[in-house]
Amino acid sequence: MMSAHKIRESKVWERTFEDWDDILDNGFLKCPEVSSQDKALASLLRTSHLIQELLEAQFSSFGVTIAQFHVLELLYFCKKQALSQSEISSKMFCSKANITSLISRMEEKNFVKRSSSKERSREKLVSLTSHGKKIVEKGFEHFERCDKSSLLGKKEAEQLVEILLKVRQGLRKKHG
View 1 (cartoon, rainbow, N blue to C red):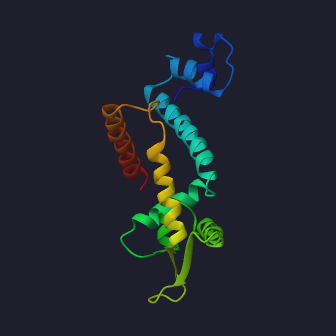
View 2: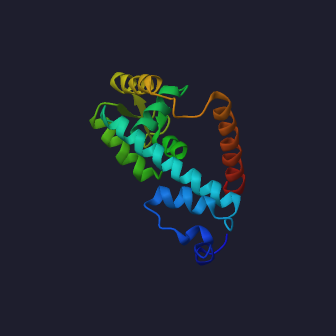
View 3: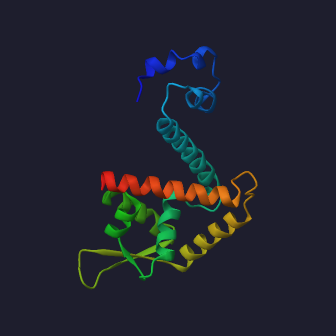
C-alpha cells in the first residue's frame, strides 16, 4: 500500500471533505494512487460499519444487542440442542471470557439457559429458551418487513455473496 502522505498529495485531496463518508467516497475511493484491493477493503469495512449501526438500532428496539442476536441465531440453527461456550466462542470469533459475560447477560434476560455437560463436568452447555426463540423469530420477521429497495438487486446480491465468500475463503487459507 502506498503511504498516506503520497495519497494525500494526489489531486483528489485538493478539496475539503465534510465527513468520513465524503472522505471515503469522494477522496480515497477516487484516488488513482490507491490500489483497487485497498479501495475494496476500505469500502467493505465502512459498509460493514454502517450495517452494524443500522442493526444495532433495529435490535435495540426489542432489547437485544447484535452479539446477543448472533448467539441466539447460532443456537436457533444448531442441529444439536445446545452448544458449549467454547463452541460458541470459536464460531463467533470471540474470546471465552467475552462469551462467558455475554452468555451471563443473555441468561439474565431469559434468552438462554446454561447447564452442565454430562460428558465433561466443567463444560457449560448453552441452549435457547422459548423466550430466546421468540426473539430470534421476531428478528427474522423484522428483516422480512424491512425496506430492501435501497439494497442490491437479486443478481447483484448473488454476485456480492460470491465475492465475499471468495474473500473469506482466501482469508481463512492465509490466516488459518
